[in-house]
Amino acid sequence: MNNIQQHQAHQNTMHQLFANPVRLLAPMEGLTDPLMRQILTQIAADLGRPYDWSVSEFIRITQHVLPAHVFYKYAPELHHNAKTASGTPIHVQLLGSDAQLMAENATYAAELGAPAIDINFGCPAKTVNSHRGGSVLLDEPETMYQIISAVREAVPAHIPVSAKIRLGYTDTSRMDDIRGAIAASGADWLTIHARTKTQGYKPPAYWDKIQSFNALDIPVIANGEIWSAAQANDCMTQAGTSHLMLGRGAVTRPDLVAQVDNHTENHDDSGKNTATLLWQDLIAHQVKFLEGAAKNDVVLVGRYKQWLGMLTKGYAEAQTVWESIKREKNKAVIINALQASVQ
Image (cartoon, rainbow, N blue to C red; front, side, top):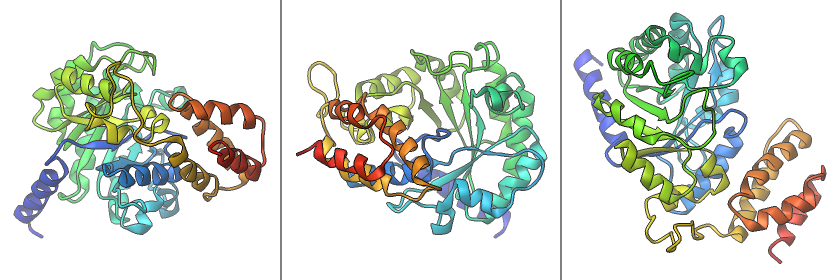
């Protein structure tokens, strides 16, 4: 494929990806792992509004090109045309500060079948930031530029390269510099979590501050503090973009993605979510999660309790189940309690 053909293939890919408002499932370390992605993308597909794509948990790049098994661990979907069982594409996210190493690992990920490469400049974790990764690089716009441009140059032209950022590290004073770095880097689109690293996950999210990034000649995806369809609508209005990435709200209400594009029908006069996915309909998905592949049942039960704890914010029934199993370690007992909750 010559350069003109590669450019045309890339343009076609971008047109297809953003032909309509996109809805993405966010990468969240220790939460949207492959099993959770499988469950949540299946629910979305069953409800008739599948996610346009999701992104893997970040793969940390430090000293060398990682072996294939590491990429397969974080994105086992690479074994299946980089899609979940329900057909949702999975993009591979990398995190690191060495531009050349990031480029080499991105190239290998593409060889393994990654349909797109996402670069993490948003992770607020202290352990990540202390090793010069994630959101700490928002204080180094030049490094951001070097990383994105190196990856963009290294991977085949038809494979998109995107970036995920926050509004800044300790504050928003570097936003102009960050925007300039993104503009010059060749990134194909940008996802913005509308808070600084210092603001963490504490409400509110400052969706209006995303507006200034719309001057970039690339799609902008808004993220942060979207728990309901009403908030999604407010976010799109304030941010000036129709594209959304859903995170913790999508785990708490797995039907949120279906509600977002139909918020009028799925809200009562109070603005609260009305049911699209009833608790009894969610039982089978929870059982499937508990029967998923894991190193051992202890890990699986712990992961499930994390999810159930989040579901208590979206479903009253989840609170009842939580109270009955919060100290339970036996997976079979937990499954029985789940099934009994709808009898």
